[in-house]
Amino acid sequence: MEPALPTAHHTKPASRIFNFGAGPATMPVEVLEKAKWELVNWHEAGMSVMEMSHRGEEFVRIAAEAEADLRALLAIPKSYKVLFLQGGATMHFSAVPMNLLRGRKKADYLNTGEWAKKAMAEAKKFCEVNVVASSEDRNFTYVPKQAAWKRSADAAYVHVCTNETIGGVEFHWTPDTGDTPLVADMSSHILSKPCDVTKYGLIYAGAQKNIGPAGLVVVIVREDLLGSALADTPNVLNYKLMADADSMLNTPPTFSVYLAGLTFKWLLERGGLAGIEKVNIAKAAHLYGYIDSQDFYSNPVVKEDRSRMNVPFTLKDASLDAKFLQEAEARGLSQLKGHRSVGGMRASIYNAMPMEGVEALVDFLEEFRAQNS
Ligand SMILES: *Cc1c(COP(=O)(O)O)cnc(C)c1O
Image (cartoon, rainbow, N blue to C red):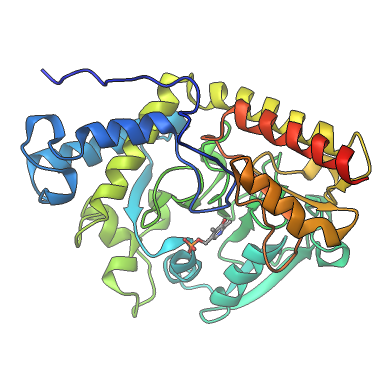
């Protein structure tokens, strides 16, 4: 029998900071402790997961359990394949058109910000991109309503980025694209709330925001969309070939898959996605509630489209930015600097950020405001 874990943390160990970085991002401390405990000798295997053959019995079991747990969390139907791939979400900006054009020459994209733009730029290498709507007119501070979308009749799919990590804009509704498959980049909010997978043709997400370490991309795809990849598609980017090989056409990122699996179990132990959503709603309400309560800080996003995961905000006096960041860092509130493309601050409060961290941040925000205004 395995020895029990030495500690079960319900609060942050003193040695750890609150990391508000957008990604790679904070992970559940319980997951890190378990991985540490199992690192050198996984379940009496006499070796680390990193040292196992990906074709060996142990790792095949680890990967199968990770998939089963992810399927349980998202209630993924049997008609969908779950793939554990590589290349970051960025690689899948290309892999999506390569696999899903299916003989068509056009795809519809919604332009909601920096990540949607990057996805479109890659797709243009493979097909005509029709921009159904854009929020660039108001600096990407809202999600264009579906009634205003100008879709094309012959698009192979409709692509959306359901949480813009940089702009802090999130879909709180699911588009209805009828028979045209809906494709979503969910990198920065997957598993933060329940999601009806059956509304999507394909969902993809890089792991380093809300799942685990970088190096892994989760792809959830309806099986009937597979099998018509462009002829030049590299085998490792061909979703059909990867699905047929249980994502092991080549060596998968084994340690990242293992850690993702631990995160899935961590979520299941906390009431699954409905359970974590409650915490995420409370965290976001506390932070936005404070930001809206005074005028020293502000967030530009339309209230109904604000992200629960990424909260950009600016100081009224930007000359205080450096002082703000320095004092935050000194209190163990780390990586609050906003993305270089938008400036200001950004607090990423993913699943693994406890309420305690958001409370510490809000306390600091108020103290800093009182001392500098
Ligand atoms: C981080 C991120 C990406 C890019 O991920 P990489 O792993 O760097 O390729 C793409 N889309 C969204 C929404 C992201 O947050």
